[in-house]
Length: 241
Image 1 (cartoon, one colour):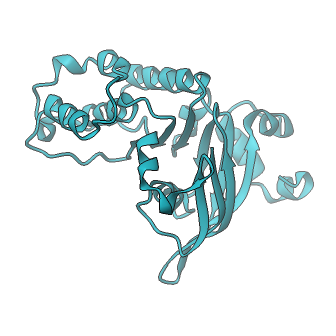
Image 2 (cartoon, rainbow, N blue to C red; image 1 turned 180 degrees about the vertical axis):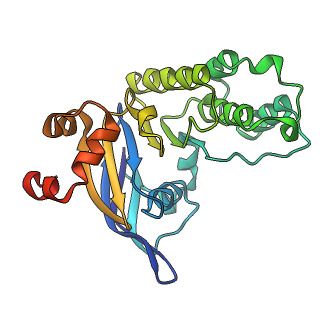
Image 3 (cartoon, rainbow, N blue to C red; image 1 turned 90 degrees about the horizontal axis):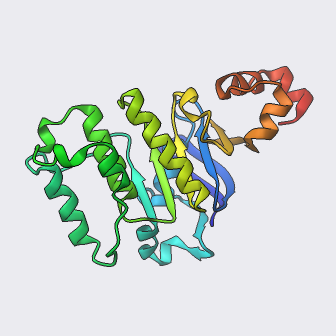
C-alpha cells in the first residue's frame, strides 16, 4: 500500500533519513519508534508531502506521490499538536473541513460521539484544553474514512478513558483493513495495538519486524521491554535483528 525506496533527507549537515526502504501493507498497525532525532517525523512528513526528500521514491498503491497530490485524500492525519483557527468553534472547524472535502459525503463520527464533542461544539479552539484539542484532532483524522491513518503521538494529553476509546477505534480500523502508522514515546500505549515495529536511529532503519516475532525472540511481552532487550548490543549481535 505504501512503499518507500532509498529515502534520504538532510537538513544542512544533519541527515534525518539515510537511504531508508520500507513497505507498509493494509490491515497493519505500524509503530514508528526511535529516540528524538531518529527520523520518525521526517518519514511521516515525507509521506504526507510536507517534506521533499533529495533522494528516493514514495509510492501509494503503486503511484508515485510526487506526481499525484490527490493521494492525500486517502490519508487521515493526526498531528502531535493540532493548529486550528483560534476564533472558530469546534463545530465551525468540523463544518469547514467538510466543506473543503466535497469529494466525501459519508462521515465517520464515532469518535465525535464517543468523546462527547456535541456537548462542546460551541467552544472556541482557543478555549480548549490540550486534551480536548487532541480529541478534535483525532475526530478529524477519522472523519473522512480514509484508507491510511498517520497518528503522531495520538494519546498525548488524553485522559485514560479517552485513550482507551481511541485505541479501540484504531484496532477496529485495522480489522477493517486500514493501514495505521503511529509514533509514540509512551510505548505502553502501543502494546495492544501494534502489529509491526519500525525502529529508526540516526536516520537509519535498524529493524522492521512483526511484533509477535519480536516477543518470541526476546521472551518479553511488553513493548518497552522488547525494545530495551533488542537494543542491547549483545542481543543484536547474537540474534541479528
